[in-house]
Length: 236
Image (cartoon, rainbow, N blue to C red):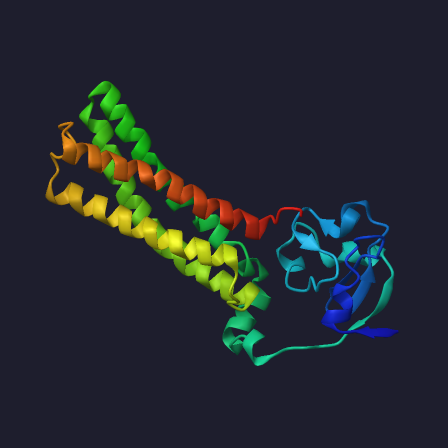
């Protein structure tokens, strides 16, 4: 059988009439006839011409699906020092493959909800003048800061494991906006602790406080958007 390296495999991307090949555990498989690989992309996430060995364990199906299609060659093993992981971590990931991709997407939902909620509850307070809404906004903000820590840590871990911490535009943007998110949320949280009555009166301090709380919504939205482009890449 023909032996492919990563560069030659990438040329079989299913575009412009080319066959769609994918690799799994050293086998190169022709999935051209699959409707799910039309145009060389599967579920707007996986691109033909790539090695799916690390992706299949986290997929909703097993490698038996690829067994329905013909093997056309083998993939030359090319592991660099930068792509290798410490043995204990590699052993853990092989035993629990779900840890390769899922911890960060699962955990990140908590800070998203808790960072957006303060704006909603502050608006409810302004409309109803019910103090408990403002108190709830403060508690949600604290929870958002707390849950952001494991979300950030698992985000860096996922970036390292799946992308070898390569410089990527979505990741750079996420890092920048995450720094902004933590800075703004901590300022607002500490301000609320030290001067709890500032927001209760609609003066210039209260307006600034409210605007900072509102700013968390677009900041979180940008982080979530670019995170989604990594999980579900857009077609170009």
